[in-house]
Length: 361
Image 1 (tube, one colour):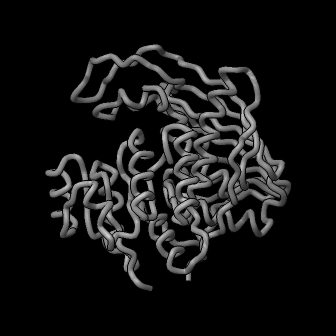
Image 2 (cartoon, one colour):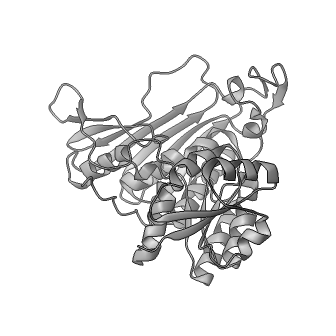
Image 3 (spheres, one colour):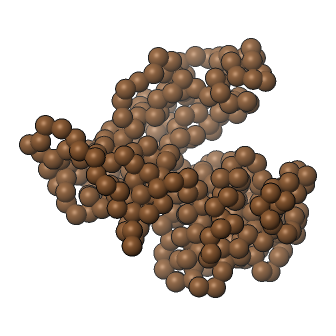
């Protein structure tokens, strides 16, 4: 396969997780970096052996770059992705696709217009843990999927994040921060979603930062911090998802459990690539751990970009698609809308359930 040349825009903390893998993938070649902080980009280029540091405009104008990896802050995702598509580049973006559904729709429409591709994190759903669960579901091991329950419960990022205020601003909160991992896993395992509702509340109007260097500063909370969601899938299955920054005393609840007519699955943390995967068949009195059947069971951030590059060369659909990310974005907004207006929200943007990943050779 001819290597796909990649240019990265955005050299913040998340870029290390991508660079440490992408510079070693045989099918990819990272040829340039760009960032508003030129010295930061130069430092990352030196660390990972990348020859060129460019301005954003220079990178977008470079004719050899086929894919732009968009690692900017969420508020800049739409601007950078649209500019890359306008420049004739495919785009792979960190989550979310955009901040607003309207901007997300513009990105997908522009990609279709230009006959280009959009891929979006998270790619943890392509890892061994979620894909092993997918195999068990597809093979009918748990029978007909009926329901699922998922929990992302934490005490909030102010205890560890050096600058957590942005996570309590409008358009953030636990749903927009962590929801993409859970919702992408749901769609990968159970297919697209047609309707949502929920209750979303701000439990504490102010939060005190207890991490360094801003210890003692107060944050004004502008977005719901405890969200209970109810989800209806096109397949007929239903699910609940609770995302919270308000659980101060910890929890013993699982990340995801999935219930079928013939058994139940404990699905691993969707923010990781590996297991454990546990199965309890109907009639059994305990869960048993299942051996992982698929590759990518480590810190494999970047595999979604790799898989999209392979799909471009093979002229087939890629799995971490922009359409899936647009549905995830709409669902997150939809739950908040449903809570504020006291109704169900009918999801307008559907997507295909992505193909399962190949098993280990």
